[in-house]
Image (cartoon, rainbow, N blue to C red):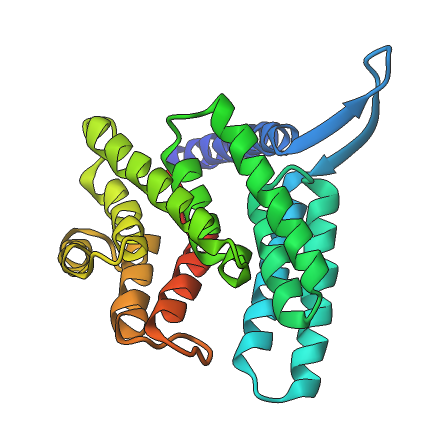
Length: 263
């Protein structure tokens, strides 16, 4: 009798669990979708944002593989793959500054300089627009600073102007981190601090921050992984692909970080 009762209760729990999971799945799907509506409020087009993340991930992987190989045939194929996937991601989320920043990198190293400049300018415009709406965003301030310092503008004659803008916005980032230190855990603030110090080339502060990350951050966290990449490679003027100087290694590290964090 007891076994029968346990079996009945187990079945009931399983049914309730499945039902709850179905509701949760539907809610997650709805939350993850963006829709376009007609004048009567009817959905005329819907897309899943997670698909854009998949395309961006594929573009990132292909781009990094293209940069890392010395085989020109493989590199060309990987750049083509990266371009295809970043355009698919942008078709879904056209207002993503991060995606346009990645597109600028892909086209710059593929040889499409005019496309690279265009995507970089669009990325900067989007960051500036978003910062007007969210001036206290640590993520936006720091990513915009990284874009100005490390992305396509580094190849421009007027780079010093972009560099000054980068220093201004990284200063805002550090001020926001200090003013909001009670809002976030220390572990959450260490990675943006590290990136800010690398941009400012404050190597003593960067080294201290790496040690603190190694002490308190989980080994599978973005902070730990990026601190390890910085200490192992960028701090010594090396990166995942060939670079000409330490500053280039640091800039590529900073761009690499944009897709790995955010608070």
